[in-house]
Image 1: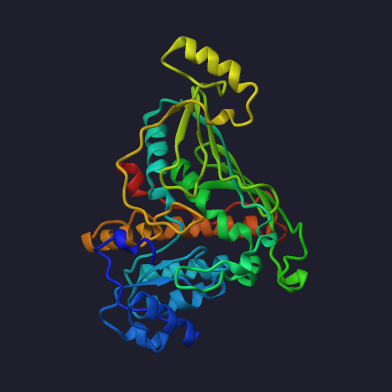
Image 2: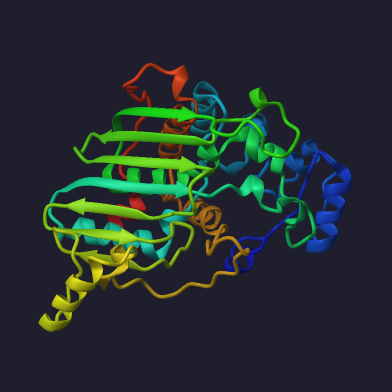
Length: 373
C-alpha cells in the first residue's frame, strides 16, 4: 500500500483477511473494499491479479485457489513452504496460461540494473566470486512489540521467528545472483539456531534457524556465498569479484544504493593519479574502505515512498508482471525463476534435511528484463 501510488496502472479492487476485524480496520484506513470471504474475492471478475501477502504457511493454499479461479498471482516469498508445492503452483499456472511470480522485486531496482549492465558489458572480465550478506542483527532484542504499520497493525514477531530469517531475507540477493549468473548447479549449506529464546514465549522447536551460510556454484562457473542471520550487526552488502575489477554495493534494501567500482586488487580508482594514491593509503586504515571507488551511474530516479526500514518499491514487482501480461510478453520475473529461488531458499533454511552438496531440480531461462536492459 505504501508504494502502490507509484504505479497508477494498478487499481486496488479490495482486500481480504481471515481475521475480519483486521480486514475491516485495514480497509477503513486505506479506503478500500473488504471482501467478506476469499471465495467472494475470487468470484469478482474485476480482480485480475491476487497479491498473496499472507503468512508463508498459507502461500500455497491461497495461490492455488487464486490460480484455480483464473487469477494471476504475485506472491510474497517463498512461493510455498515445500518444494513440491511450489512446483505444483508453477505447473498449475502454466496449465491455465496464468502468470505467477514471487517477491522480492529489488532486482528491478536501479542498482541491480546498473550492476547487470556492467557485468554484461564485460568491463570486469570473468566474474569468479560473489559475497552477499543479509545480516539483520538481534531484532528479537529490540522493542519490536511497539513496531506498527502505517495503519497501526503490529509486526508479526511470532510468525517472523517461526518462518526464519533465511526464508524472509535470502531472496533479496538470491534473485540478484541468479539473474546475474544463471541457475545454480549445486549448493552446500549450513544452518543452525543460535538463540532458543526470542522473547516471544515460543518453544525452541517452533523457532526456525536464525543463521544460514550457503555456497552456490552456478552453471556459468561463478561461485557465491550468502549469509543470513539474526546475530551479527546489520549488513546488507554485496561484493562481486571479476578478473579485471570488482563491484561493491552497501544495501540490498535500497533500490538506489550506490555501487562502487574498484580495481582487481580491491583498491579505489580515480581519474586523478594523486587522489588515487591518497585513497590507497587511507583505505588501508579504514574499516569501510570497500565504499571507496568510482560510482556506477544509476538510471533515472523513480518514485519510492518506503516504510522506515528500507527504500524498496514493493509494488514494482506486481506492476511489472501486470504490464507484461497486458502486453502479451514474458514477465520480467518468471514462474520458473521464482521456483528456483524458492528451492534454494528452502534448502538453505533447513540445510540439515538435505544431502550436501545439493543439486537443485529446478531451473530457468534467462530473464527477459536483464537480457534487454
